[in-house]
Length: 292
Image (tube, rainbow, N blue to C red):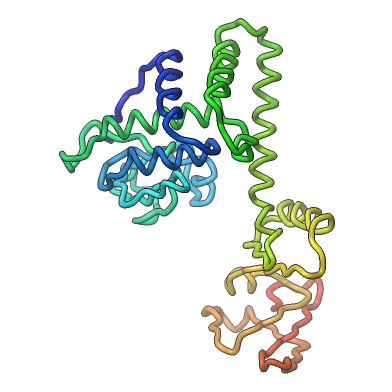
């Protein structure tokens, strides 16, 4: 793997750079970072090391930590992310898509050596390092709800961060403050996951039992009968289950190939909805494997 640009600035130097950057824009923390990203990272084709997140590794069943070599094909300044082309992986057992969308910029580390000599990788690297430092150490979940993110907030957060790490604040108190921040971030992420359910026509893409229970609990307190909840599952996944009812709302679909011995269809009833959509209801017998 190629080497990435190092970042050796002191806390005071980082504070100086952040104050300089934020003094030229207005809005929430994320809005200001979006403006800065659009202004300072207007190039594509730069190479970087992508340090995969735990969530991404879990999704693709890869061992964490994992670092791959990528080339950035486009940058989404509004979402602070990039689309990348995977150029090489650490070993042959790592299997990733050739192109990956919406990789957070803070997961990318521009490399010293670039295929395109016109790319100012050093400037891009320094900007991403500052953004990474901000979101990992200074950002709070409620910052995006504030209309204005002030320079005083940056100074106060930096002072707190320094005191948490230099022993000024007793270790027991420092650990509690850090834990409170981590808990707040976790709650914020859960809210972000559930927020789409407040749309007029909500879409939940499925998950494990605990996720379903969390969604159900949210629905009971936040959603009325005027909302719609859609559950999405592939035919492969559906046929691996033993549901009490299966509704097929399409007249054009294919069932994947499988041995006929695995299929046992019973209690099939059909009815035609007013709009012409065919609904097929199927009740399965309990305790019987491979029953669909």
